[in-house]
Image 1 (spheres, one colour):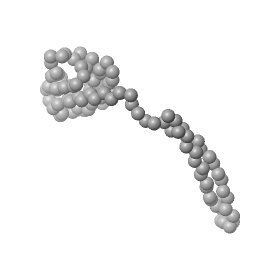
Image 2 (cartoon, helix red, strand yellow):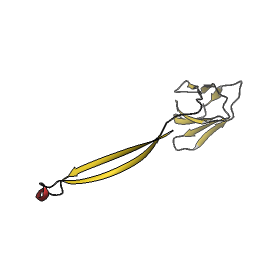
Image 3 (cartoon, rainbow, N blue to C red):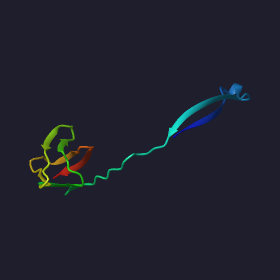
Image 4 (cartoon, one colour):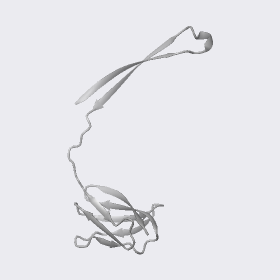
Length: 119
């Protein structure tokens, strides 16, 4: 359902102090089409990455099976690419240097990014 909103704005201003006695009006009309915001389906995908900060092993638990897990450094360089295993949700990150990393978890429907800190 689309609704149309018609807005009339009146501006009153003074050009210079000489014309301070004269008011000038400018009228403008704006037309905006507003659509109802909605989503057709709601997918709740709860992902937990723990512990954070992590030292050696990062555990990832999710309600949806991940297809691919990629770890990026702060410069955007891929430092680790993981094919997730249904049986194992613990991943070794001991080879990463201390710092901030971004973990991108891709599923068949979406991709989510999470920040982790490696000590």
